[in-house]
Each structure stands twice: as C-alpha cells, then as structure tokens.
Image 1 (cartoon, rainbow, N blue to C red):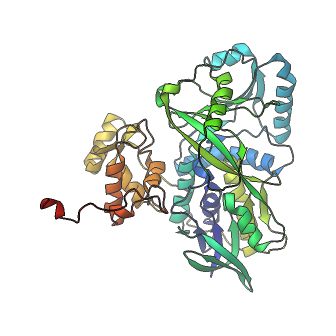
Image 2 (image 1 turned 90 degrees about the vertical axis):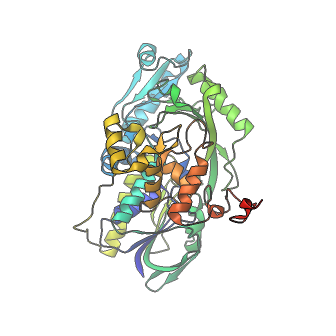
Image 3 (image 1 turned 180 degrees about the vertical axis):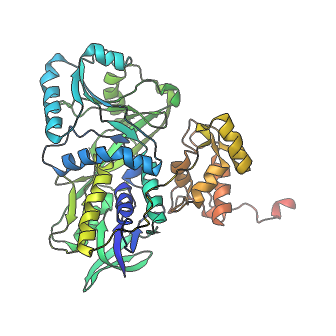
Length: 483
C-alpha cells in the first residue's frame, strides 16, 4: 500500500505530486496516456492571469490570486521561463468605460494589486500595433506568460527527484473503498492507497462519480488557436484581452515565452472529450474577432493551428477538497481557466489538507531545485563552444527552425519522467515547433528515440497509443542488398 495515489499527470496533478513530495510519504501518480501534460495542460493560452475576472468569493478568484503570487518563486526554483509582461483588457468604445471600471473594482475586491485604467495615448505608447478603434484599457501589472507544458514537466521531474513514482499508460478503470483506504484498478496494475487525489482534468467527473454520490459533470470546451511566426515577436508586448461584450468574450492576442504570437481561443462546448479538431468556422471566428486587436494579422506567417479542450464543470467552479461522502478521496476537479495560474496554490492547499489527515511530517532532505535542459539556441558563442567540448552532440543540430541539438533530445528522453514519443520530445525541447512544423527533424528524432529506448521504428509514436509513424517495412534487413 502507498500513502497517496494521484490520478492525472497534468499541471495540477504534477504540482500536487511535487508539493506532497515535501513530506515523508510513498506517492504514486497514474497518468492514462504515454506522457504527462498530454491533455489540457499542453494546449491553452499560457497566461498567468491577474485574477480580476473571477467572481468575488469563488475558489477561482481565491486560488487565481494566490497562485499568481507564487509564480516567481516556483519558476525560479524549477528553472521555467516566465515573464511578467502585464495584461491589457481593451475596450473599443467610450460607452464601455463603466464596464471596464466594474472589472477593475472586481479585481480590487479579489485582492489583485496594480490595476489601473489607461487611455488611448498610454495604450498606443505601450502597444503601437493595437487596432484603430481601441479606446482604453484595464492595465493588469501582475499579468504574465509561462510555458505550460514546460512547467508541468518541471513539476513532474522535481517530484520524481524527491521520490514520487510515475506510472504512464495507467488509465484508471475502477476505484473501490477498502477498510484501510482505496483500491485503484488501472491498466498498469492494481494499487492500494490511504488517500486518492483526483486530478484527472476532462475525466475528473468520471473519477469522482466512481466513488461519490455528489456527482459532477465536466463538459469539454474547445478553444481554437493560431500561432504566428517568431518574426512578429515584437508585435505585442502585453497579453491583449478584449472587454467582454454581449457578442462574447472576444479573442486574446498574446506573445509567448518562446517568441511566437498566440491568437485565440474560441469557446465551444462539445460532447467528445477527445475531439481536438480545428474547424473552418472556429478559425474564421478567431480571425474576425482578433482583427479588432490586430488589424493586419499576417496570415502568411501562421505556423500552425491547434485546439485545446478545457474541463468546464457544470458548477462553473473549481471542485476542491475531500468529497463529502468519500473520506480520504480528494478532488481537484473542474480546473479550467484560471487553472494554470492557480495550480501551485491548489497544490499547496490540497497537500496541507492531505498531510494533516495522514499526520505526515516534512522531509529534511526535500530539494526544491530543478534545472532545465540547457537550450543551445539561447547560449552565447562561448557557451556553445564549452557545451560542445563537454558533449559533442551539442554540435549536431536536429531541428533547424528552433536550433535544437541532439544533446537536448537525448537528455529529454533520459530525464526523470522522460519523453517516449515525438510530441514528448517536442514539448521538452521545441524540436518540431518551428516554421516547418517537424518537416525536417522528424526522421532523426525517430532514430534517436529508437536508440535511447531500444525500440523498433515501428514502435515510435507521435503521441502514444496508435499514433504510429510507420506501419511496416518494404524489405527485411539486408534484403535490399540483393534487390
């Protein structure tokens, strides 16, 4: 029996794992797919929200503000890129001033510092490319940006360094109450634990409803996005939101920590929790509304489109804490936006609750520091020469668009909770995320995966499951020599 089983390897699950690893506990994390950060944590707007838009008194408001305050320390400890680039909520009419002021007052009530309304002159000074009809804006000084999947990986790696065991391809199929806790049946085996933490994202309703009569429903909410090439990295500096109107919430335009520009998302409730298609209608809506913010969107410089699914709860609120009729079963359910921002605070809250129930003591040897994979593209010439002298694989550039080397790819596989697929490498190194979208680097990436994992090319997948690149060989080894 372990002390705690965490179900779900997204940003919240991995943050909870790291927080619990501060204590003398035996902890296992079960992830249904082949990798962590494979759900909504890999496909979102990557924003550190200020906390002005959540309704006062809600858990969303509370944990948004608390989480925002924790980001600088967390990202420093985990060596995760983030930036306090500020946020701007832009209005497009003088008639909207009262709505903007109401949003500011709501933020103040939530405890958000650094909120002010700026006029056209200041707005255009800050953002010269803002649309012609932009009138004024709410300035959110605590707003920021972060790489969501790199943060998730960092939480996981640090948790593993501190003793958490990760099990992948471990979809939970049943949970049963036992005299001493819980039996969790998964595709990776059966586990018993004193406590269970439900961080299953889109499937957190399924997990909760296995054990509790306090039922919840999670609706997949699809958001579609465009990504604009790095050559436009200076087009905007803040994350630009549009003031919500009767036409909808509008569309975000924001820089990313990696230098691209993100445009989106839409918000469409769907039935299928696996449907991450982009649609003609959705992408057209993105461009229509985004053009208010960015009039001359450079369509010829789109790198790609994608969609992500948010775990929207029917209660329109986070569901956190011990289920009322299931002792030692803890929920982190319905964690949609601002879930990324809230994740470190949610993890701290749940860890305090769980460790109090288990009477667990803090370790003397917990190490909060995790160093990221050194990025060749960010090194000086002197640093590059030194890196190559230590590891010649740094001289072998695999991904030309993002200047990712063989050394980085191999380390991404070898790390705790390392990559097992091409997408896993992409999220850890950015190999394949550039302008050619993996058109050049995929063959070598597949070869390196085979070498490191000791598998056949026929076993390599894009993102686990049946997403294989190759179905068979035309020749057996050596046959082509006689052909």
